[in-house]
Image 1: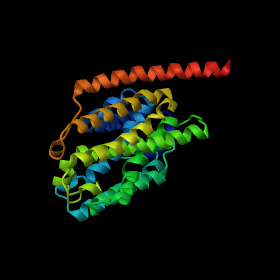
Image 2 (image 1 turned 60 degrees about the horizontal axis):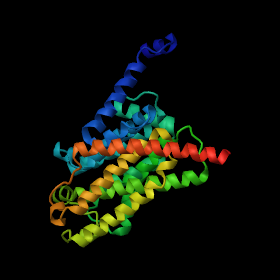
Image 3 (image 1 turned 30 degrees about the horizontal axis):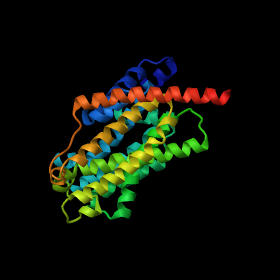
Amino acid sequence: MVAERNRGAGGHRFTPKYNRMSRKASSTVIGTYSTSFSLATKMLGKRERQDIRNLYAMVRIADEIVDGTAAEAGCTDAQVRELLDHYEQLVLLAPTMPFHPDPVLHAYAGTVRRCGIEEDHVRAFFRSMRRDLTQSTYDHDALDEYVYGSAEVIGLMCLSIFLAGREVTAADRATMTSGARSLGAAFQKINFLRDLAEDTGQLGRTYFDELDGHALTEPVKHKLLDDIDDDVADARLSIPLLPGAARAGVLAATNLFADLSERLRATPAERVAVTRVRVPGPKKAVIAGRAAVSAARMARMGRMGRGAHAS
């Protein structure tokens, strides 16, 4: 009855405040869990920044369900599976509802509606999350399938956010789609290598087939990093095509992970296997600043190219 009266009264008394709170909740998630991505999102346009934060928060919560937080809180394996199944259904249903009592899902749902994030991508993500509950080793084909759902579709969802309301050519979209998938794969695989001690020692997972029953060696480490660097190189081809509001943030994130790759390459394999290599905070700030300059240069070159074409 109260809801009916408020709908008929006109105006917006309650939703603006709830929307602001929901956006802040999502922003808190990314600020708590990832200094690198939090820094990169600050370089995005205002709309893109908030939508990426909304997407990240949903993905992060699903990740926490399967990556030990729920188990550490006392949930059994069966309860963790139930939590993930239930959360997937909430996530899929959220965009159909104008209001959601979960602030993160309320903000995420608005992003889906604005940006046209595809349900198939969301389902693929949860399929990979579900594999973490039952599968501890991966051959190359299984890893490709896992990485598609756990990371490549995240890149595709980010691309949906960046291109929302914009018209691009089919050729440019194909290049950006390939770049989004490659960048997502690179981020995921470099995290696997950086988090080797935690994944193997605490979670009992071995994502790289080369390490199933074997210690990390220098040749294997360099082989894995060569594959990661190839993905990064492919992703770089698409960055100049991105809208200006997205370009600096994506370039900053790319360069942060490229720097991490270099640090892993310079760290002895036996150290990589037992410690978590990081990019220091001051170095991250330098990388972000340089990315802003490079992105501005790309924009100028793009305008010059269009001018030359017009003449």
